[in-house]
Image 1: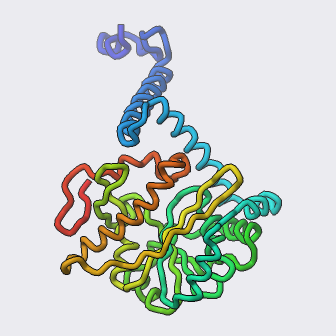
Image 2 (image 1 turned 135 degrees about the horizontal axis):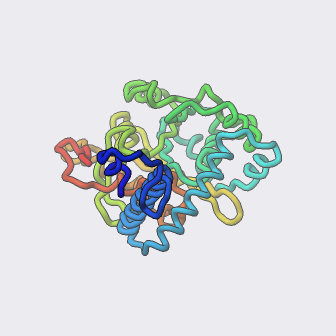
Image 3 (image 1 turned 60 degrees about the vertical axis):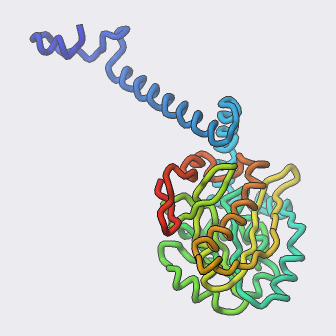
Length: 309
């Protein structure tokens, strides 16, 4: 007899469930575990469709992604020994660093450095923006204030020319107007992430992995409004260490037939294409891999280009 039935019949309440005599608390835990397993299986199925990969491959990929993020988050947020961070710094390679520095010398315009939460992105972008880049105004748009340990790690790994807290701009504490004011100053470099999930700002529809997807429109909008170019950059973990890739400078397109939305879409598509090349090679290194379904469009976009998911 079920305990609830026993109580209704005037019998003594029981702390056990009649199902195999297991305690009610254990039954509840097993039910919760089964529910989590079901949700995990559903999530795996969705990722399998998004990536066009078999489920067993997606499960392995998710495990690799979890391990990678656990390691990189620890090396970013927690104070590391000088030996560890010097080893990271010495492993960084960037074949395009000389070309990037030459661009800063030759072109006095301000620009947006469009990057992604990929690989050891904090170390990679800090390296790119060190050295000669430290002689010009540089700012990093961040979701949240970085911990003191992060700055200490960067200085130990890369050297004294790495940016400090004075270069940090917290997303919630600024506006498009403030960022535009910075970009209208000469030789200012603003680092922005181009892969944030939907809750961090407006998005626009583009093509990603041969599907309609929605990515942030902020970097392209700022570039277009202020007529400044964009340089895409990404950091990947390879066998020999960290590699920073820096793409060709992209000039903001003119509004196509007066259509600013289409111009923003065109520029955002170029950034997403750049990202997709590295994502397909190293998918486990993307911070938002397991939120990939959130990026795909589930309904028609509105007239202003914002995605309604």
